[in-house]
Image 1 (cartoon, rainbow, N blue to C red):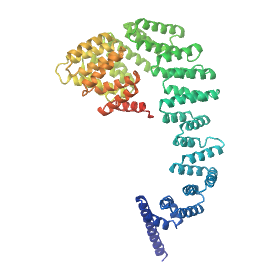
Image 2 (tube, one colour):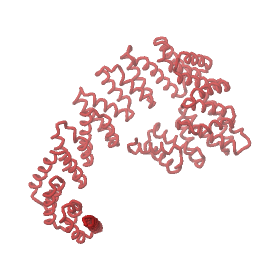
Image 3 (tube, helix red, strand yellow):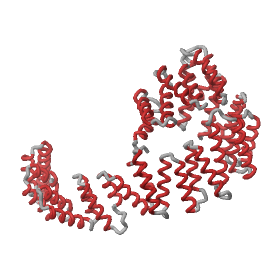
Length: 602
Protein backbone atom coordinates (compact mmCIF):
# COMPACT_ATOMS: atom_id res chain seq x y z
CA UNK A 1 0.00 0.00 0.00
CA UNK A 2 2.85 2.36 0.90
CA UNK A 3 4.45 1.61 -2.46
CA UNK A 4 1.25 2.63 -4.26
CA UNK A 5 1.01 5.87 -2.26
CA UNK A 6 4.65 6.65 -3.02
CA UNK A 7 4.13 6.04 -6.72
CA UNK A 8 0.98 8.21 -6.77
CA UNK A 9 2.85 11.01 -4.97
CA UNK A 10 5.67 10.82 -7.50
CA UNK A 11 3.22 11.04 -10.40
CA UNK A 12 1.45 14.00 -8.73
CA UNK A 13 4.80 15.75 -8.18
CA UNK A 14 5.85 15.27 -11.79
CA UNK A 15 2.50 16.60 -13.04
CA UNK A 16 2.74 19.60 -10.72
CA UNK A 17 6.27 20.45 -11.87
CA UNK A 18 5.22 20.07 -15.50
CA UNK A 19 2.22 22.35 -14.99
CA UNK A 20 4.37 24.92 -13.21
CA UNK A 21 6.97 24.83 -15.97
CA UNK A 22 4.30 25.30 -18.62
CA UNK A 23 2.83 28.27 -16.76
CA UNK A 24 6.25 29.93 -16.48
CA UNK A 25 6.93 29.34 -20.18
CA UNK A 26 3.55 30.79 -21.12
CA UNK A 27 4.06 33.87 -18.93
CA UNK A 28 7.46 34.48 -20.47
CA UNK A 29 6.06 34.01 -23.96
CA UNK A 30 3.42 36.70 -23.31
CA UNK A 31 6.13 38.93 -21.86
CA UNK A 32 8.38 38.58 -24.91
CA UNK A 33 5.44 39.35 -27.21
CA UNK A 34 4.65 42.51 -25.24
CA UNK A 35 1.30 41.20 -23.95
CA UNK A 36 2.03 42.46 -20.44
CA UNK A 37 -1.51 42.21 -19.01
CA UNK A 38 -1.56 38.48 -19.74
CA UNK A 39 1.97 37.90 -18.46
CA UNK A 40 1.18 39.96 -15.33
CA UNK A 41 -1.73 37.73 -14.30
CA UNK A 42 0.38 34.58 -14.69
CA UNK A 43 3.45 36.04 -12.96
CA UNK A 44 1.32 37.31 -10.06
CA UNK A 45 -0.11 33.87 -9.49
CA UNK A 46 3.33 32.26 -9.73
CA UNK A 47 4.88 34.78 -7.31
CA UNK A 48 2.80 33.39 -4.45
CA UNK A 49 5.22 30.46 -4.31
CA UNK A 50 8.59 31.51 -2.82
CA UNK A 51 10.76 29.36 -5.09
CA UNK A 52 8.74 30.37 -8.13
CA UNK A 53 9.08 34.02 -7.18
CA UNK A 54 12.86 33.77 -7.48
CA UNK A 55 12.52 32.09 -10.84
CA UNK A 56 10.34 34.82 -12.38
CA UNK A 57 11.70 37.76 -10.33
CA UNK A 58 13.26 39.76 -13.17
CA UNK A 59 10.42 39.39 -15.70
CA UNK A 60 7.69 40.03 -13.09
CA UNK A 61 9.27 43.33 -12.01
CA UNK A 62 9.75 44.38 -15.63
CA UNK A 63 6.07 43.58 -16.32
CA UNK A 64 4.87 45.68 -13.38
CA UNK A 65 7.09 48.55 -14.50
CA UNK A 66 5.57 48.36 -17.98
CA UNK A 67 2.09 48.54 -16.48
CA UNK A 68 3.16 51.25 -14.00
CA UNK A 69 2.12 49.07 -11.05
CA UNK A 70 4.84 50.57 -8.85
CA UNK A 71 3.11 49.94 -5.52
CA UNK A 72 2.74 46.25 -6.29
CA UNK A 73 6.36 46.14 -7.48
CA UNK A 74 7.46 47.68 -4.17
CA UNK A 75 5.52 45.10 -2.14
CA UNK A 76 6.94 42.25 -4.22
CA UNK A 77 10.55 43.44 -3.97
CA UNK A 78 10.28 44.01 -0.20
CA UNK A 79 8.88 40.50 0.19
CA UNK A 80 11.73 39.13 -1.90
CA UNK A 81 14.29 40.94 0.25
CA UNK A 82 12.68 39.56 3.43
CA UNK A 83 12.58 35.98 2.10
CA UNK A 84 16.06 36.08 0.50
CA UNK A 85 18.34 38.14 2.74
CA UNK A 86 21.40 36.74 0.98
CA UNK A 87 20.28 38.06 -2.46
CA UNK A 88 21.81 41.52 -2.40
CA UNK A 89 20.65 42.27 -5.94
CA UNK A 90 17.06 42.43 -4.70
CA UNK A 91 18.08 45.44 -2.61
CA UNK A 92 19.59 46.97 -5.74
CA UNK A 93 16.23 46.39 -7.44
CA UNK A 94 14.54 48.35 -4.70
CA UNK A 95 16.88 51.30 -5.18
CA UNK A 96 16.22 51.26 -8.93
CA UNK A 97 12.48 51.38 -8.13
CA UNK A 98 13.10 54.39 -5.87
CA UNK A 99 14.80 56.15 -8.81
CA UNK A 100 11.96 55.21 -11.13
CA UNK A 101 9.30 56.65 -8.79
CA UNK A 102 11.30 59.84 -8.15
CA UNK A 103 11.90 59.13 -4.51
CA UNK A 104 13.71 61.75 -2.42
CA UNK A 105 17.26 62.05 -3.89
CA UNK A 106 18.91 62.16 -0.46
CA UNK A 107 17.09 58.97 0.51
CA UNK A 108 18.29 57.28 -2.69
CA UNK A 109 21.90 58.39 -2.10
CA UNK A 110 21.85 57.03 1.45
CA UNK A 111 20.27 53.73 0.37
CA UNK A 112 22.87 53.39 -2.39
CA UNK A 113 25.72 54.12 0.02
CA UNK A 114 24.40 51.63 2.57
CA UNK A 115 24.07 48.97 -0.14
CA UNK A 116 27.65 49.44 -1.37
CA UNK A 117 29.04 49.37 2.17
CA UNK A 118 27.11 46.18 2.84
CA UNK A 119 28.31 44.59 -0.40
CA UNK A 120 32.02 45.15 0.26
CA UNK A 121 31.86 43.04 3.41
CA UNK A 122 31.64 39.88 1.26
CA UNK A 123 33.40 39.51 -2.11
CA UNK A 124 30.59 37.44 -3.61
CA UNK A 125 28.21 40.37 -3.08
CA UNK A 126 30.60 42.70 -4.88
CA UNK A 127 30.70 40.38 -7.88
CA UNK A 128 26.90 39.93 -7.82
CA UNK A 129 26.30 43.69 -7.85
CA UNK A 130 29.00 44.14 -10.47
CA UNK A 131 27.09 41.86 -12.85
CA UNK A 132 23.84 43.60 -11.94
CA UNK A 133 25.12 47.09 -12.82
CA UNK A 134 26.69 45.86 -16.05
CA UNK A 135 23.32 44.46 -17.11
CA UNK A 136 21.50 47.76 -16.52
CA UNK A 137 24.42 49.81 -17.94
CA UNK A 138 24.83 51.79 -14.71
CA UNK A 139 28.58 52.28 -14.97
CA UNK A 140 28.73 55.21 -12.55
CA UNK A 141 27.35 53.13 -9.68
CA UNK A 142 29.45 50.17 -10.78
CA UNK A 143 32.60 52.30 -10.53
CA UNK A 144 31.58 53.59 -7.08
CA UNK A 145 31.07 49.99 -5.96
CA UNK A 146 34.47 48.83 -7.20
CA UNK A 147 36.29 51.93 -5.94
CA UNK A 148 34.76 51.37 -2.49
CA UNK A 149 35.68 47.67 -2.56
CA UNK A 150 39.22 48.42 -3.71
CA UNK A 151 39.76 51.04 -0.99
CA UNK A 152 38.53 48.61 1.65
CA UNK A 153 40.93 45.91 0.46
CA UNK A 154 44.31 46.05 2.18
CA UNK A 155 46.22 44.92 -0.91
CA UNK A 156 44.60 47.65 -3.06
CA UNK A 157 44.78 45.25 -6.00
CA UNK A 158 41.97 42.72 -5.54
CA UNK A 159 39.44 44.67 -7.60
CA UNK A 160 41.88 46.64 -9.77
CA UNK A 161 41.22 44.62 -12.94
CA UNK A 162 37.45 44.83 -12.46
CA UNK A 163 37.68 48.59 -11.87
CA UNK A 164 39.85 49.03 -14.95
CA UNK A 165 37.25 47.21 -17.03
CA UNK A 166 34.46 49.38 -15.61
CA UNK A 167 36.37 52.55 -16.49
CA UNK A 168 36.83 51.24 -20.03
CA UNK A 169 33.10 50.52 -20.43
CA UNK A 170 32.37 54.01 -19.11
CA UNK A 171 34.60 55.55 -21.77
CA UNK A 172 37.31 56.56 -19.29
CA UNK A 173 40.20 54.89 -21.07
CA UNK A 174 43.01 56.73 -19.30
CA UNK A 175 41.56 56.04 -15.84
CA UNK A 176 41.48 52.41 -16.96
CA UNK A 177 45.16 52.70 -17.85
CA UNK A 178 45.99 54.10 -14.40
CA UNK A 179 44.39 51.08 -12.74
CA UNK A 180 46.13 48.66 -15.09
CA UNK A 181 49.52 50.29 -14.53
CA UNK A 182 49.01 50.22 -10.77
CA UNK A 183 47.94 46.57 -10.86
CA UNK A 184 50.89 45.60 -13.05
CA UNK A 185 53.34 47.32 -10.71
CA UNK A 186 51.94 45.76 -7.53
CA UNK A 187 51.72 42.27 -9.00
CA UNK A 188 54.82 42.37 -11.23
CA UNK A 189 52.58 41.50 -14.17
CA UNK A 190 53.94 43.52 -17.08
CA UNK A 191 52.52 41.06 -19.62
CA UNK A 192 48.94 41.90 -18.56
CA UNK A 193 49.64 45.63 -18.93
CA UNK A 194 51.14 45.19 -22.38
CA UNK A 195 48.24 43.01 -23.55
CA UNK A 196 45.69 45.56 -22.29
CA UNK A 197 47.47 48.41 -24.07
CA UNK A 198 47.63 46.45 -27.32
CA UNK A 199 43.92 45.62 -27.07
CA UNK A 200 42.69 49.14 -26.39
CA UNK A 201 45.09 51.77 -27.77
CA UNK A 202 45.18 51.96 -31.55
CA UNK A 203 45.13 55.55 -32.76
CA UNK A 204 48.18 57.72 -33.33
CA UNK A 205 46.95 60.34 -30.85
CA UNK A 206 46.56 57.61 -28.23
CA UNK A 207 50.12 56.39 -28.82
CA UNK A 208 51.39 59.92 -28.31
CA UNK A 209 49.36 60.23 -25.11
CA UNK A 210 50.71 56.89 -23.88
CA UNK A 211 54.25 58.08 -24.44
CA UNK A 212 53.50 61.26 -22.48
CA UNK A 213 51.98 59.28 -19.59
CA UNK A 214 54.97 56.95 -19.39
CA UNK A 215 57.41 59.88 -19.34
CA UNK A 216 55.39 61.49 -16.56
CA UNK A 217 55.41 58.25 -14.54
CA UNK A 218 59.19 57.98 -14.95
CA UNK A 219 59.67 61.55 -13.71
CA UNK A 220 57.40 60.93 -10.72
CA UNK A 221 59.03 57.55 -9.95
CA UNK A 222 62.69 57.84 -11.02
CA UNK A 223 63.71 54.76 -9.04
CA UNK A 224 61.03 52.45 -10.44
CA UNK A 225 62.35 50.71 -13.57
CA UNK A 226 58.91 49.28 -14.35
CA UNK A 227 57.82 52.43 -16.19
CA UNK A 228 61.08 52.63 -18.16
CA UNK A 229 60.57 49.04 -19.28
CA UNK A 230 57.02 49.78 -20.41
CA UNK A 231 58.13 52.86 -22.34
CA UNK A 232 60.93 50.84 -23.95
CA UNK A 233 58.42 48.14 -24.89
CA UNK A 234 56.09 50.80 -26.30
CA UNK A 235 58.87 52.18 -28.53
CA UNK A 236 59.73 48.67 -29.73
CA UNK A 237 56.07 48.09 -30.67
CA UNK A 238 56.18 51.34 -32.62
CA UNK A 239 59.50 50.24 -34.17
CA UNK A 240 61.11 53.40 -32.88
CA UNK A 241 64.35 51.71 -31.89
CA UNK A 242 66.25 54.96 -31.45
CA UNK A 243 63.99 56.00 -28.56
CA UNK A 244 63.92 52.45 -27.21
CA UNK A 245 67.72 52.58 -27.09
CA UNK A 246 67.64 55.81 -25.06
CA UNK A 247 65.43 54.19 -22.41
CA UNK A 248 67.37 50.92 -22.34
CA UNK A 249 70.63 52.81 -21.98
CA UNK A 250 69.29 54.70 -18.95
CA UNK A 251 68.16 51.45 -17.28
CA UNK A 252 71.42 49.75 -18.23
CA UNK A 253 73.48 52.38 -16.45
CA UNK A 254 71.21 52.51 -13.42
CA UNK A 255 71.07 48.75 -12.87
CA UNK A 256 74.55 47.99 -14.20
CA UNK A 257 73.30 45.40 -16.67
CA UNK A 258 76.55 45.51 -18.67
CA UNK A 259 74.74 46.11 -21.93
CA UNK A 260 72.34 43.16 -21.75
CA UNK A 261 69.11 45.12 -22.36
CA UNK A 262 70.70 47.29 -25.06
CA UNK A 263 72.07 44.20 -26.81
CA UNK A 264 68.61 42.57 -26.78
CA UNK A 265 66.97 45.64 -28.34
CA UNK A 266 69.77 45.91 -30.90
CA UNK A 267 68.95 42.35 -31.97
CA UNK A 268 65.26 43.28 -32.39
CA UNK A 269 66.23 46.37 -34.40
CA UNK A 270 68.46 44.20 -36.62
CA UNK A 271 65.63 41.72 -37.22
CA UNK A 272 63.41 44.66 -38.21
CA UNK A 273 66.10 45.85 -40.66
CA UNK A 274 66.87 49.06 -38.77
CA UNK A 275 70.55 48.40 -39.23
CA UNK A 276 71.72 51.95 -38.48
CA UNK A 277 70.13 52.05 -35.02
CA UNK A 278 71.31 48.49 -34.36
CA UNK A 279 74.86 49.61 -35.21
CA UNK A 280 74.61 52.49 -32.75
CA UNK A 281 73.51 50.12 -29.98
CA UNK A 282 76.22 47.56 -30.69
CA UNK A 283 78.79 50.36 -30.62
CA UNK A 284 77.48 51.45 -27.22
CA UNK A 285 77.87 47.95 -25.78
CA UNK A 286 81.43 47.71 -27.12
CA UNK A 287 82.47 51.15 -25.88
CA UNK A 288 80.91 50.89 -22.41
CA UNK A 289 81.82 47.26 -21.69
CA UNK A 290 85.02 46.34 -23.59
CA UNK A 291 85.63 43.46 -21.17
CA UNK A 292 82.00 42.44 -20.83
CA UNK A 293 80.26 39.22 -21.77
CA UNK A 294 78.50 40.80 -24.75
CA UNK A 295 81.53 42.51 -26.29
CA UNK A 296 82.52 39.78 -28.83
CA UNK A 297 78.90 39.31 -29.89
CA UNK A 298 78.29 43.06 -30.18
CA UNK A 299 81.44 43.42 -32.25
CA UNK A 300 80.40 40.72 -34.68
CA UNK A 301 76.84 42.04 -35.00
CA UNK A 302 78.10 45.59 -35.43
CA UNK A 303 80.05 44.51 -38.47
CA UNK A 304 77.10 42.46 -39.69
CA UNK A 305 74.82 45.51 -39.30
CA UNK A 306 77.26 47.55 -41.37
CA UNK A 307 77.32 44.70 -43.86
CA UNK A 308 73.55 44.82 -44.27
CA UNK A 309 73.69 48.58 -44.78
CA UNK A 310 76.31 48.15 -47.50
CA UNK A 311 74.44 45.29 -49.19
CA UNK A 312 71.13 47.17 -49.25
CA UNK A 313 72.58 50.44 -50.57
CA UNK A 314 72.79 50.27 -54.36
CA UNK A 315 75.08 50.52 -56.21
CA UNK A 316 77.17 48.39 -53.88
CA UNK A 317 80.60 49.89 -53.33
CA UNK A 318 83.28 47.19 -53.50
CA UNK A 319 85.52 49.34 -51.29
CA UNK A 320 82.85 49.12 -48.57
CA UNK A 321 82.83 45.34 -48.96
CA UNK A 322 86.61 45.22 -48.55
CA UNK A 323 86.41 47.52 -45.51
CA UNK A 324 83.87 45.18 -43.94
CA UNK A 325 86.15 42.19 -44.51
CA UNK A 326 89.02 44.15 -42.97
CA UNK A 327 86.89 44.83 -39.86
CA UNK A 328 86.04 41.14 -39.56
CA UNK A 329 89.71 40.21 -39.88
CA UNK A 330 90.70 42.78 -37.26
CA UNK A 331 88.09 41.23 -34.94
CA UNK A 332 89.60 37.77 -35.52
CA UNK A 333 93.02 39.12 -34.56
CA UNK A 334 91.70 40.70 -31.37
CA UNK A 335 89.13 38.16 -30.25
CA UNK A 336 90.63 35.07 -31.86
CA UNK A 337 89.13 32.34 -34.01
CA UNK A 338 86.70 30.86 -31.48
CA UNK A 339 83.22 29.41 -31.47
CA UNK A 340 81.96 32.96 -30.96
CA UNK A 341 83.38 34.04 -34.32
CA UNK A 342 82.45 31.05 -36.49
CA UNK A 343 79.40 32.83 -37.93
CA UNK A 344 81.57 35.85 -38.70
CA UNK A 345 83.88 33.59 -40.70
CA UNK A 346 80.86 32.50 -42.76
CA UNK A 347 80.02 36.14 -43.41
CA UNK A 348 83.52 36.87 -44.66
CA UNK A 349 83.41 33.88 -46.99
CA UNK A 350 80.06 34.93 -48.48
CA UNK A 351 81.21 38.54 -48.96
CA UNK A 352 84.33 37.36 -50.78
CA UNK A 353 82.36 34.93 -52.92
CA UNK A 354 79.31 36.99 -53.91
CA UNK A 355 80.87 40.46 -54.22
CA UNK A 356 84.61 40.06 -54.87
CA UNK A 357 84.49 36.84 -56.94
CA UNK A 358 87.13 35.32 -54.62
CA UNK A 359 85.48 31.92 -54.81
CA UNK A 360 88.41 29.68 -53.93
CA UNK A 361 89.39 31.82 -50.95
CA UNK A 362 85.79 31.76 -49.73
CA UNK A 363 85.64 27.97 -49.92
CA UNK A 364 88.92 27.72 -48.04
CA UNK A 365 87.54 29.90 -45.22
CA UNK A 366 84.40 27.76 -44.99
CA UNK A 367 86.38 24.52 -44.93
CA UNK A 368 88.50 25.92 -42.09
CA UNK A 369 85.33 26.94 -40.19
CA UNK A 370 83.93 23.43 -40.61
CA UNK A 371 87.14 21.92 -39.21
CA UNK A 372 86.84 24.17 -36.11
CA UNK A 373 83.11 23.61 -35.52
CA UNK A 374 83.59 20.44 -33.46
CA UNK A 375 80.25 18.73 -32.79
CA UNK A 376 78.18 21.60 -34.18
CA UNK A 377 76.73 19.62 -37.08
CA UNK A 378 74.17 22.27 -38.02
CA UNK A 379 76.87 24.87 -38.53
CA UNK A 380 78.94 22.43 -40.59
CA UNK A 381 75.98 21.71 -42.85
CA UNK A 382 75.17 25.42 -43.21
CA UNK A 383 78.75 25.92 -44.42
CA UNK A 384 78.35 23.05 -46.89
CA UNK A 385 75.22 24.69 -48.32
CA UNK A 386 77.22 27.93 -48.62
CA UNK A 387 79.99 26.07 -50.44
CA UNK A 388 77.41 24.52 -52.75
CA UNK A 389 76.14 28.01 -53.57
CA UNK A 390 79.67 29.22 -54.25
CA UNK A 391 80.30 26.36 -56.67
CA UNK A 392 77.19 27.55 -58.55
CA UNK A 393 78.83 30.98 -58.70
CA UNK A 394 81.89 29.24 -60.15
CA UNK A 395 79.69 27.43 -62.69
CA UNK A 396 80.63 24.05 -61.21
CA UNK A 397 77.15 22.62 -60.59
CA UNK A 398 78.28 19.02 -60.02
CA UNK A 399 80.33 20.03 -56.97
CA UNK A 400 77.27 21.87 -55.69
CA UNK A 401 75.12 18.78 -56.16
CA UNK A 402 77.49 16.62 -54.09
CA UNK A 403 77.53 19.10 -51.20
CA UNK A 404 73.75 19.51 -51.18
CA UNK A 405 73.32 15.73 -51.15
CA UNK A 406 75.67 15.44 -48.15
CA UNK A 407 73.52 17.87 -46.20
CA UNK A 408 70.32 16.09 -47.25
CA UNK A 409 71.73 12.84 -45.87
CA UNK A 410 72.96 14.47 -42.65
CA UNK A 411 69.73 16.43 -42.01
CA UNK A 412 67.07 14.05 -43.28
CA UNK A 413 64.30 15.13 -40.90
CA UNK A 414 65.29 18.75 -40.39
CA UNK A 415 64.82 22.10 -42.08
CA UNK A 416 68.44 22.24 -43.26
CA UNK A 417 67.89 19.02 -45.20
CA UNK A 418 64.88 20.60 -46.94
CA UNK A 419 66.89 23.74 -47.70
CA UNK A 420 69.64 21.61 -49.26
CA UNK A 421 67.08 19.68 -51.29
CA UNK A 422 65.56 22.95 -52.55
CA UNK A 423 68.98 24.31 -53.49
CA UNK A 424 69.68 21.08 -55.36
CA UNK A 425 66.42 21.40 -57.28
CA UNK A 426 67.28 24.98 -58.24
CA UNK A 427 70.69 23.78 -59.37
CA UNK A 428 68.99 21.33 -61.78
CA UNK A 429 66.70 24.16 -62.90
CA UNK A 430 69.63 26.52 -63.62
CA UNK A 431 71.24 23.76 -65.74
CA UNK A 432 68.01 23.30 -67.74
CA UNK A 433 67.30 19.83 -66.31
CA UNK A 434 63.66 20.74 -65.70
CA UNK A 435 62.25 17.24 -65.39
CA UNK A 436 64.64 16.26 -62.59
CA UNK A 437 64.16 19.62 -60.86
CA UNK A 438 60.38 19.16 -60.87
CA UNK A 439 60.61 15.67 -59.36
CA UNK A 440 62.48 17.08 -56.35
CA UNK A 441 60.24 20.14 -56.10
CA UNK A 442 57.07 18.05 -56.06
CA UNK A 443 58.42 16.19 -53.03
CA UNK A 444 59.24 19.50 -51.32
CA UNK A 445 55.66 20.74 -51.73
CA UNK A 446 55.00 18.74 -48.55
CA UNK A 447 57.94 20.28 -46.68
CA UNK A 448 57.42 20.99 -42.99
CA UNK A 449 58.53 24.61 -43.46
CA UNK A 450 55.85 26.66 -45.17
CA UNK A 451 58.32 28.99 -46.85
CA UNK A 452 60.21 26.08 -48.42
CA UNK A 453 56.96 24.39 -49.47
CA UNK A 454 55.75 27.64 -51.10
CA UNK A 455 59.06 28.19 -52.93
CA UNK A 456 59.01 24.60 -54.17
CA UNK A 457 55.42 24.94 -55.36
CA UNK A 458 56.10 28.19 -57.22
CA UNK A 459 59.18 26.87 -59.01
CA UNK A 460 57.40 23.60 -59.82
CA UNK A 461 54.47 25.52 -61.33
CA UNK A 462 56.87 27.74 -63.27
CA UNK A 463 58.49 24.68 -64.85
CA UNK A 464 55.18 22.91 -65.45
CA UNK A 465 53.44 25.91 -67.02
CA UNK A 466 56.31 26.75 -69.34
CA UNK A 467 57.52 23.35 -70.49
CA UNK A 468 54.34 21.25 -70.69
CA UNK A 469 52.46 23.44 -73.20
CA UNK A 470 55.23 23.78 -75.74
CA UNK A 471 57.57 21.21 -77.22
CA UNK A 472 60.35 23.85 -77.18
CA UNK A 473 62.01 24.72 -73.87
CA UNK A 474 64.17 27.50 -75.31
CA UNK A 475 62.28 30.32 -73.57
CA UNK A 476 62.42 28.47 -70.26
CA UNK A 477 66.14 27.81 -70.67
CA UNK A 478 66.73 31.51 -71.38
CA UNK A 479 64.75 32.46 -68.28
CA UNK A 480 66.65 30.01 -66.05
CA UNK A 481 69.96 31.47 -67.25
CA UNK A 482 68.83 34.98 -66.31
CA UNK A 483 67.57 33.70 -62.96
CA UNK A 484 71.07 32.30 -62.39
CA UNK A 485 72.58 35.72 -63.15
CA UNK A 486 70.36 37.24 -60.45
CA UNK A 487 71.50 34.58 -57.98
CA UNK A 488 75.11 35.31 -58.90
CA UNK A 489 74.55 39.00 -58.05
CA UNK A 490 75.14 40.03 -61.68
CA UNK A 491 72.20 42.40 -61.50
CA UNK A 492 73.03 44.81 -64.33
CA UNK A 493 73.67 41.93 -66.72
CA UNK A 494 70.46 40.21 -65.61
CA UNK A 495 68.41 43.40 -66.04
CA UNK A 496 69.71 43.90 -69.57
CA UNK A 497 68.81 40.31 -70.49
CA UNK A 498 65.33 40.68 -68.93
CA UNK A 499 64.64 43.78 -71.01
CA UNK A 500 65.51 41.81 -74.17
CA UNK A 501 63.45 38.81 -73.06
CA UNK A 502 60.37 40.90 -72.32
CA UNK A 503 60.36 42.21 -75.88
CA UNK A 504 61.10 38.78 -77.33
CA UNK A 505 58.53 36.83 -75.28
CA UNK A 506 55.82 39.48 -74.76
CA UNK A 507 53.12 37.06 -75.93
CA UNK A 508 54.65 33.99 -74.30
CA UNK A 509 53.35 32.25 -71.16
CA UNK A 510 56.56 33.43 -69.48
CA UNK A 511 55.82 37.15 -69.89
CA UNK A 512 54.46 37.64 -66.36
CA UNK A 513 57.41 35.69 -64.88
CA UNK A 514 59.88 37.86 -66.78
CA UNK A 515 58.14 41.02 -65.63
CA UNK A 516 58.07 39.91 -61.97
CA UNK A 517 61.76 38.94 -62.03
CA UNK A 518 62.60 42.29 -63.58
CA UNK A 519 60.62 44.07 -60.85
CA UNK A 520 62.44 42.12 -58.11
CA UNK A 521 65.81 42.79 -59.74
CA UNK A 522 65.11 46.52 -59.84
CA UNK A 523 64.06 46.44 -56.19
CA UNK A 524 67.27 44.58 -55.35
CA UNK A 525 69.17 47.40 -57.10
CA UNK A 526 67.24 49.95 -54.99
CA UNK A 527 65.27 51.15 -58.02
CA UNK A 528 62.08 51.25 -55.94
CA UNK A 529 59.89 53.38 -58.20
CA UNK A 530 60.86 51.43 -61.32
CA UNK A 531 60.28 48.11 -59.56
CA UNK A 532 56.84 49.19 -58.32
CA UNK A 533 55.98 50.38 -61.83
CA UNK A 534 56.70 46.87 -63.16
CA UNK A 535 54.49 45.38 -60.44
CA UNK A 536 51.64 47.72 -61.38
CA UNK A 537 52.11 46.78 -65.04
CA UNK A 538 51.93 43.07 -64.18
CA UNK A 539 48.75 43.56 -62.11
CA UNK A 540 47.12 45.57 -64.92
CA UNK A 541 48.18 43.61 -68.02
CA UNK A 542 48.39 40.10 -66.55
CA UNK A 543 45.63 40.19 -63.90
CA UNK A 544 44.37 36.69 -64.77
CA UNK A 545 47.81 35.10 -64.73
CA UNK A 546 49.15 33.07 -61.84
CA UNK A 547 51.58 35.72 -60.59
CA UNK A 548 49.14 38.62 -60.31
CA UNK A 549 48.53 38.00 -56.59
CA UNK A 550 52.30 37.70 -55.97
CA UNK A 551 52.80 41.10 -57.60
CA UNK A 552 49.87 42.62 -55.73
CA UNK A 553 51.07 41.39 -52.33
CA UNK A 554 54.64 42.60 -52.99
CA UNK A 555 53.30 45.99 -54.13
CA UNK A 556 51.15 46.25 -50.98
CA UNK A 557 54.06 45.46 -48.65
CA UNK A 558 56.30 47.98 -50.42
CA UNK A 559 53.56 50.60 -50.16
CA UNK A 560 53.24 49.86 -46.45
CA UNK A 561 56.90 49.47 -45.45
CA UNK A 562 58.84 51.62 -47.94
CA UNK A 563 56.31 54.28 -48.90
CA UNK A 564 54.61 54.33 -45.47
CA UNK A 565 51.28 54.93 -47.23
CA UNK A 566 48.87 53.25 -44.83
CA UNK A 567 45.67 54.05 -46.73
CA UNK A 568 46.97 52.86 -50.11
CA UNK A 569 48.46 49.70 -48.57
CA UNK A 570 45.09 48.85 -46.98
CA UNK A 571 43.42 49.38 -50.36
CA UNK A 572 45.86 46.97 -52.02
CA UNK A 573 45.50 44.30 -49.31
CA UNK A 574 41.72 44.61 -49.64
CA UNK A 575 41.98 44.17 -53.41
CA UNK A 576 44.08 41.02 -52.99
CA UNK A 577 41.55 39.51 -50.57
CA UNK A 578 38.63 40.38 -52.88
CA UNK A 579 40.14 39.52 -56.28
CA UNK A 580 42.28 36.52 -55.28
CA UNK A 581 40.45 34.72 -52.41
CA UNK A 582 42.50 31.55 -52.89
CA UNK A 583 45.89 33.27 -52.77
CA UNK A 584 48.59 31.83 -50.52
CA UNK A 585 49.15 35.42 -49.38
CA UNK A 586 45.58 35.74 -48.15
CA UNK A 587 46.24 34.98 -44.49
CA UNK A 588 49.18 37.39 -44.24
CA UNK A 589 47.34 40.08 -46.25
CA UNK A 590 44.34 39.86 -43.90
CA UNK A 591 46.61 40.05 -40.86
CA UNK A 592 48.46 43.10 -42.21
CA UNK A 593 45.19 44.79 -43.20
CA UNK A 594 43.76 44.32 -39.70
CA UNK A 595 46.93 45.66 -38.09
CA UNK A 596 46.83 48.75 -40.30
CA UNK A 597 43.16 49.21 -39.45
CA UNK A 598 44.05 49.12 -35.77
CA UNK A 599 42.84 45.68 -34.75
CA UNK A 600 44.90 43.69 -32.27
CA UNK A 601 46.11 40.48 -33.92
CA UNK A 602 47.68 37.54 -32.05
